[in-house]
Image 1 (tube, rainbow, N blue to C red):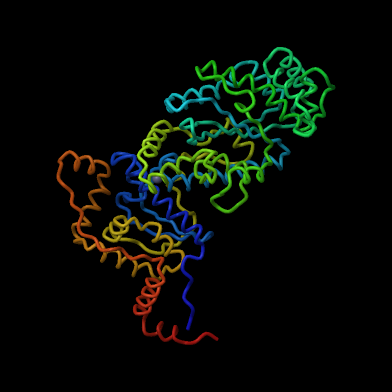
Image 2 (image 1 turned 90 degrees about the vertical axis):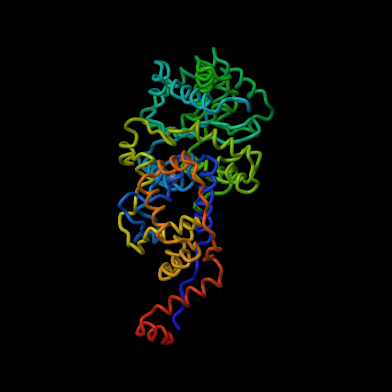
Length: 495
Ligand SMILES: [Zn+2]
């Protein structure tokens, strides 16, 4: 006998996809029936049928003909798709920067806040402080002396003991051939004499034993900044310390000017080398796709990570997980507040001309990325309105995609079982699906206004494609549908 294809070989990918749709369901409940996430991957695009596509290159399945919300902060399904594309763009940018011998620094910008702070005002003040950092003449001349080519800025929010914590990450690209080291040294000397970081470095200088705690390049730089040593060796490490030394007081001043509390000198403006993937893996743990966690992952997928250490703060999807696992109403409120505060906020912002310089290509909006389909794909199956309504009814989108990747021959039998399980009058189901597709949210609003009670028809438990019993049943159904010739061919032993 020919062997049947294995069911769900990539369990990790399958589980992640299942959770995305599951969390999307919870986001829908938390955000209410009028939020845009309600239609995402549920309502059909008018005049289109729902299709299951198989990407010829990756062999991954996708659903086509469905509306996508493109809300990276609210929708786990769209967030995964959009941030994956952004991550690939960042990887390309990092590779291009390496080939052009550019130096990359990774900044983390934070501000102090309290649990009672309003997240929306905190985020807008943080964004204003970040824009202010290099807006004035001194900032521009500093950037020019360092040979700054451009930044890519990312916004992130976590939840910790002080409530929701918005902060920024920035990848800064520098051209070493354009660094004006005499000017940088002059900036450091003048700043060391007049600004608060001089006190910081003097304090660091007297910490015993300095050499054991800090890299030699830092000690060399710190002694130069405090006026007790010669000019440091000019290298990317020196660039890192000089950048942090000069910009920490500027960051504090920007925050204060925007009405924020003054950030801590040691943690408010943190700068790290671009090559610290191993450090990030140790710090934050799980990476969704199995690759090594690098700066490009941190920039775009930080809010997708599961926090293994509660002390590090929860990601915003962890709030939805708390709603799912414990029905936590506080987490639901926090998620609602977060989505409202981050509405229309860009996940990544590239400086003008940087994408062209690094050969990343034209930037697409979140909506455009969410609606993208694979360039070369085969249509595995096309669902009619009743079949799609049944899939929606049981939220079986992830199962449908799993099955299409591992046993596409079983799709038809699976859909028949779903429709049968729904036990719904086909005409009624079709009518509901059509109205929702055509009118979208208006239908929901009218239903709410008219106060007509909507009673769901009785349901039978839907088939669970992950059980071996169902797999065997499905294989039997597929075999029964084969033509006599196919059945005879299948009965011939291998070899
Ligand atoms: Zn979505």
